[in-house]
Length: 255
Image 1 (tube, rainbow, N blue to C red):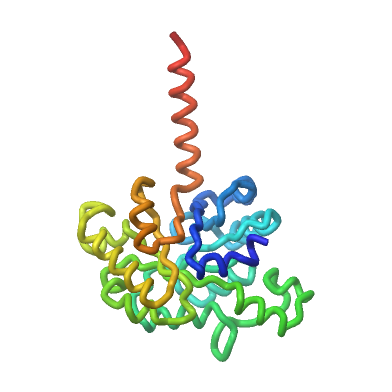
Image 2 (cartoon, rainbow, N blue to C red):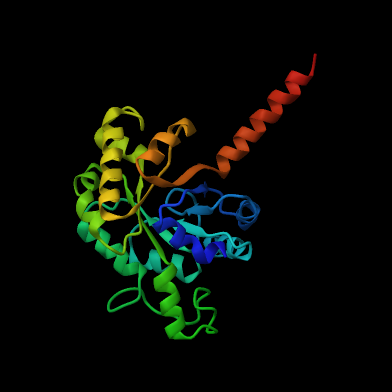
C-alpha cells in the first residue's frame, strides 16, 4: 500500500513527487488522490482549511490509498495532534529554527511521556478497532515528521536540527528564506547557498531533504545534491494553467 510504505520510501531517499492543495475541498483532494502523484500536502498554514475541511480531505485521500501530509499552521501540539488523529501520514511544520523546536515538534508527533495524546476513538486508531499496542507500533513506524527550514536562523542551526533522530525530512522553503535574508528572489545566490547547506547537513545526518522549486529545470541539479521530496505547484496552478491553455488553444484554432 502506498500509505503504509510512504515513510519507508521517504527515509530511503526515493524520488517522491507531490503537490500542494490550497482549496479546502474534499472533492479536489479526491480527484488528485486518483492521480499518479506520490503524495498530497494540505496547506493549512496558508489556505483556509478548518478542522472539518482537513478531516474530509484526509478521508478522501485515504479512500484512494494516497498518502497525505498536512502543513500545520504552527508548531502548536494541538494542531499536530489533530492532523495525525484524523489520519494524515505526517505533518510539515513551518519555521523550525533550532534544536529545541525540532525536538519539540518531534515530541508532539510521537506517543510517549509528555508527547502526543492518545485517543483510541480517532480515525488513526481505527475508531477503537485497533488495540493500543498495535496502534502505538503502527504510529511509530509510519508517522512522518517534516521540519520546514525557511529562516536564516534555521540554516544557522541546521546541523543541530538535522541530528534530531525523529525528524524524517528537512524541507527547504526558498521563498521564505529569500524574505529572511532580504534577497530578491528564491533563486538569489544567498538562498541557493543556504539550500545547499541544508542539503549537506541532511546528507551527513541521514535525513531526507525536500524542496519546492519554482523551475522544474532545476530538479536534476538538486537531485544530485540529495533532494528527494518535491512538493511542486498546486491545485491553483493546475486550474490557472489549464484555463490559460484552453483559451489559447481555442483562439489559435480560429482563423
